[in-house]
Length: 257
Image (cartoon, rainbow, N blue to C red; front, top):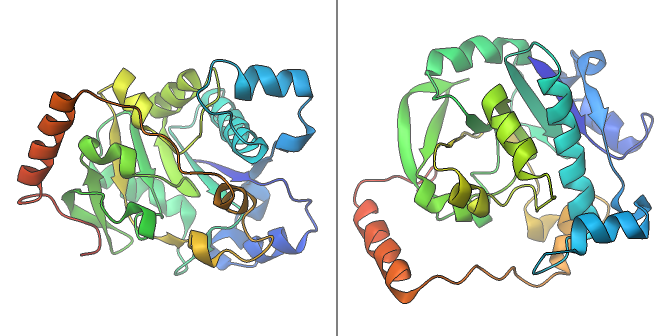
């Protein structure tokens, strides 16, 4: 399984030293490939083409850099022969020590559907409090795994720790041929209904409101932006979705009640 780190930090920075001081990451420090695009360093003409043109709201420099970094890692993964890739941002925090190389065998035991995104953290955060789905019968490192119902995909975000298979990596690369906010997947679902999103809680991340200065560049920048405008749907479509969700609430589960 390929291992990637998304970071714009230098190798000797306190931030990366803190990341690799965690046992789960430290034992594989030399296996990680690092990708990090600094959005503010992108030439103006290129930034306009990638982040501004044909968009209702321009991507911020940090959002663009984040997306380009993740996509670069995914392209590298697709150029390899590996079956899965695990990708971490440099503010991911381990909850317990376990061997990353053992995850592949454990994931295959879960029997996940092809073209999957397995979030290893984020479902516990406030922004994902409304996400619902069905729990798998098996656990991953003794943590339950939720298969996200795709009606809730617009409410599901964060990509600081995750695993993808090759089909999902290719889907993400194609989807971001013109970069979008990386962890907003609603429009992707509009284009492709054959997606599988799963969530578990193996890694932590600071809540948006708790981010200290310098702790999460993207989160700091997002605090200064207005909430995104949700694509307007017809009254009847919104009513249909609302009714379906009301019914689903009787059977679907939240990760944390």
